[in-house]
Amino acid sequence: MDFDWISTDGKLVLIEKAVRTVPYGFLGVLFAVYMNQLAFDAFVIGIVLTITVFSSALYTFTVSLIADRVGRRRTLIFFALMDFVAGSLLFLSTAWWAPVMAGIVGNMTVGAGEVGPFLSLEQAILPKTCDSKHRTLTFSIYNLVGYGSSSVGALLAGLPQYLGTEPAAYRPLFLGYLVSGLAGALLYSKLSRGVELEAGAKKQKRAVLSEKSKPVVQRLAALFAVDSFGGGFIGQSIISYYFYERFALNLSSLGLIFSATQIVTAISFLAAERIARRIGLVNTMVFSHIPSNIFLTAIPFAPSAAGAVALLLCRHSLSQMDVPTRQSYVMAVVEESDRTPAAGFTNVSRSIAQSFSPSLAGYAIANLWMGTPFVAAGTLKLAYDLTLYGSFRKTKPPEESAAEP
Image (cartoon, rainbow, N blue to C red; front, side, top):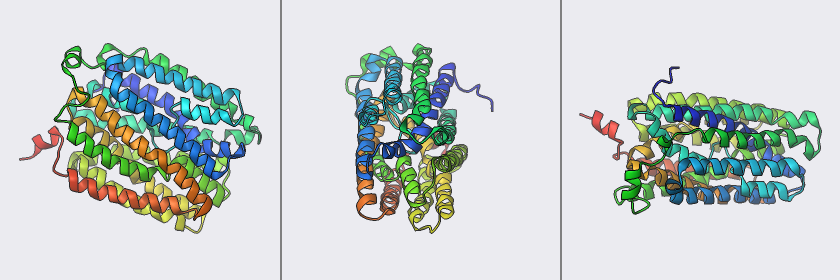
């Protein structure tokens, strides 16, 4: 594929996305299992995952307010170094407090897709690295790189199984997480001034969001919160724990399963861009999401591991097609000076809503039925799909409005 449409800054963002999401791939699979080996029970694991997601939401909210003033490049370097600190904590100690502190300090992703300050800032930067014609394609490539790299990380999650049964067997992977933080800081330092908000727009801007963008962002943030609250019930760490407990799958098997889901997801991003060109961004978001949530709800009713994995793969072949289209849509319907806060507020609403779900999922698994998180997630996400379509099917990005007769 020819990448002439994207600037050097865009290519640096894509490279760093790959470097960052390889560790996120194995952390999403093994983090809950690692805590289980440290004698955490299901409810406490859910609490720690909630703290991890909530801290990421707090960072994202802070970024929304100050990143354009402090500088996007400086902010990205800072959070890359925070990942370095989190990796160091996990690498140096097997005490119970190490994963708790790492979850607070770092920005590790414990779900299927990335959340946090990196996503919001890169989402604001990417439209400046290409023209509007290639915006959705750029976001599709961005997410393809992330999920493809995450699939490699998921394969690596089986490594501790061959190094021993002790928690120390996880250290080589935690070292990789540590190194990725340093590499990320180096890559971000090479970004040009072109990634920053223009000086003129910075001086003119008084409010965090303009009056024109505010109602759109508020409605989208509220809807995305519902979707993400549902998604928090079935984060990758929760699904990994479910398969580990119900079907007694080992880390190698889990790594292969989640690597396959990431590959299937990555392929779907290119299809999403082509479909969006034909039927529009909102239609692609909704009509790919509805069948994926039906597959999701059916997973706990599968009688065997093979059936559950097949349903999971069917779900992932559709479930994330709304990600690049959603990111492209948000950036298209707000002004350029509103892109960082718009990305931040819509992402932070997702992160905050998602932060409550893992503890509820952990409680449900421990005290109710193991399949409860899947049914709860599917129901909430279907409600989101229908409401999103009803609210935004007539609010089109500029290129779609211009194409209409």
